[in-house]
Image (cartoon, rainbow, N blue to C red; front, side):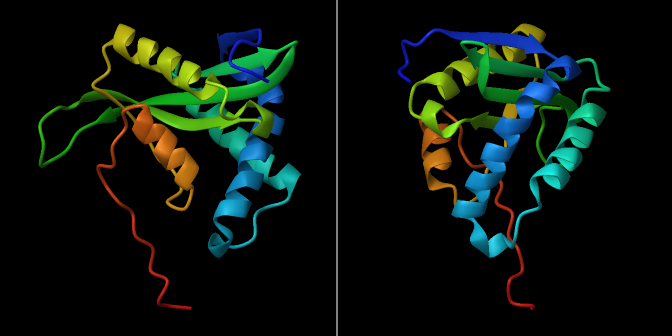
Length: 167
């Protein structure tokens, strides 16, 4: 797959979730490879059941959406975005913010520019709707993803630390 391949990207909601399942499982498998220290991953059906339930709950907010990338009618990537009220007792800048909850591409679609296209479309929506910011969370050991997000203009603002001293 190259960046010039014919990719269709559609915006939708719950009607796209059935097509998202293999993409979610590809991400779950990738997380298992790059973060084995986080423990065993859930079985396919259980992992998807839980993630789908989260997506359906977030889609209860009309502002949430899915971008699904297809090549020849086969899903090859997606972005899931939810919107929430953001604010800080420390910093100014309250308002609605978009959270790029998930960005996943099938392994053969990585490195083709598709991830950047999906982020650009998410940014367009964030700008069009006037949201205060766009943020995302990434697994700390996912070095390729972190480099990609940094190239796309994201910077780390908070770091979550996990107590591994207690067993």
